[in-house]
Image 1: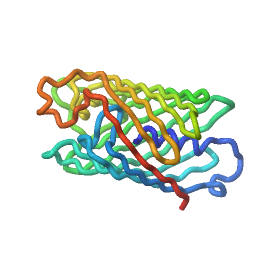
Image 2 (image 1 turned 90 degrees about the vertical axis):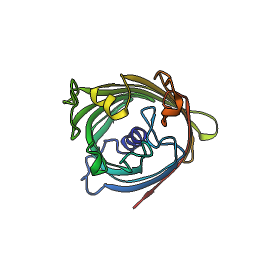
Image 3 (image 1 turned 45 degrees about the vertical axis):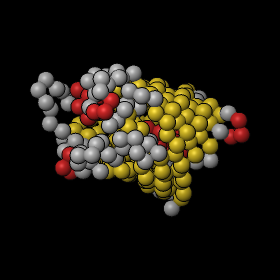
Image 4 (image 1 turned 60 degrees about the horizontal axis):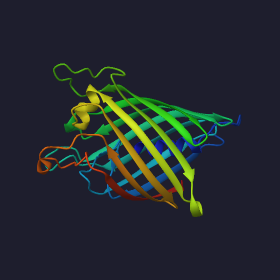
Amino acid sequence: MKALKLTALAAAVLAGSAVSQNALAEITANASVTSNYIWRGLTQTTNDAAVQGGIDYASESGFYAGTWVSNVNYGADDIYSYEHDLYFGFSGESGDISYDVGYLYYNYDSEAEFDFAEVYGSVGYGALSVTLSLLAHTEADEGEGQDFGFAEASYVSVDYGMPVLNGAELGFHVGYHQGDFAEAFNGVPDGYADWGISVSKDGFSFAVTGTDLDEVEDPSTDPYDNDSVKFAVSYSVDFEL
């Protein structure tokens, strides 16, 4: 997913060299399939599979930029079919402390008129990281009483990863999403918390996620089932260009 992809990219472009950026620049590509595209605890494909991929540029100076795409589906009669992200940022480390700051633009079908962008920053200590994402701007129109201004919506998360048996990695995640724009885009009545536990090895990943959203009174009217615990199996591969 987006957040996990950016975290991995940040680790790959840690600063620490005074050599020319162009001389040590690297371009890589990635491709993945997942049984359910889950973003901040919510399905982006009505619990169906997704095919995803991207291209990244990274330099030893810490600067990176890239693009990423996935199919999405928010219901049988909706007008969304894809998500196309564009991002750039700068990351680095000093001893056990790491940091990452950047800008991420989410592009959807033009008919949806719901493109938006976030600015984000994270600080890590060893395997623990804290990330804050703030709404930067959006093309979506505000409804009555809504405020889609800068930083009027936010997402804060804490992540921790640790090695386990045979080279596998165990990951833990908690986050909180709030603001008028978050409620409008996600179709939820209020701010909500999400959590996740994942096990990854050799490109394969198994994740269990959930939220604190209240149960829908009539489940037959809810194609997302975002109040329930979800399971997702994914496989990804990275290669140099």
